[in-house]
Image (cartoon, helix red, strand yellow):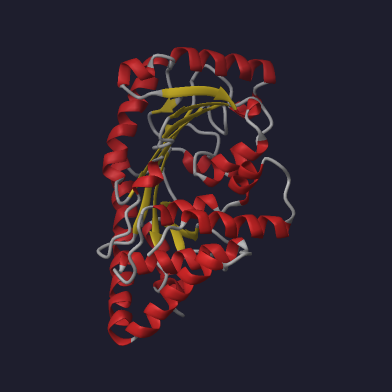
Amino acid sequence: MWYDNVSLNTDYNYISSRIRLARNFDNALFPSKLSDTEAKKLIDNTIGELSNISTDLGIHTNADILDRISEIERMSMYDRKVLNLTLAKKKTPTGIILNDNEDISIVINGDDHIRLQLLSGGLMLEELWKRADRLDDYINEKFRYAFDEKYGYLTAYPTNVGTGMRANIVLHMPLLSKGKSFSNLILGLSRFGVSIKGVYGEGQENCGSLYDISNSKTLGHSEKEIIDQVRRVAVQLNVQEDYIRSMALKDHNISIRDEVYKSYGILKYARKLTLKEALNYLSAVMRGVADGLIKLENDKNVYDLMFGVQASNLLQEAKRPLSKEELDIKRADYIRENLGNI
């Protein structure tokens, strides 16, 4: 999977990048206005027209209909960043074309007729955009897009009108996010046309210290300008996180090492773990690996575990409903089996 290549490195804290494009066909109503019969016809036609994508572009893909996929698997796809929550819970006909690594997906008849998404570990927005642009052109050869000379690509949500692009970078900021001025920092950076929010947790609470930086506007900006905006803010946050961490390592080295090793010990030997506990301890170990304080047999799977500890994955493994306590026990078991030794 694409997230197997996420590298934890002392030089940067970039976890992943994503480019998403929203497109609609000029000869069809928006998905919310289609009947189920019309939607199924559109999905079948689109999948049929794109069936040669593996041969034409060398991308091995599989096509399916979301309502044929179990609810648990759809939620697992949400946790793995393939689907958003709306799509994972959508009841009306929706199709998906997905490649083997899950770094390329084309959702058909979601909020828009086409939702093209590319994912990668690290800071890779420019590279992802080049690949997305090629795929976008390929689809546009088969279907004429709804496009206005003044407003750009027409989308179901007004906030996506324009380029129809969302560019995202996920950063690991375990120290910067704990600072008293972090909320003011986020507010200040919003003037650059970006949105910053925690990946896990609700409201002001964040678990795992992962933050998603994305553009908040698409109208009036080119794709390059959007990518540059998001990248500039992510680099600025990364520089500040690095500075704080280097100072902390210099002034409080033993305390930091103690936190990292205690977190590893809890993960390795605990018999029950809530999702919040698991994500926070994994974040501490990720930081320890990135800063060279702890060496695991396979440090790349630490980030993988953040997907694995989600309820959807544990329920899939169990193949039966689990109570909250059973989930916490199963989560601890899963981590012990997959964390690896020092």
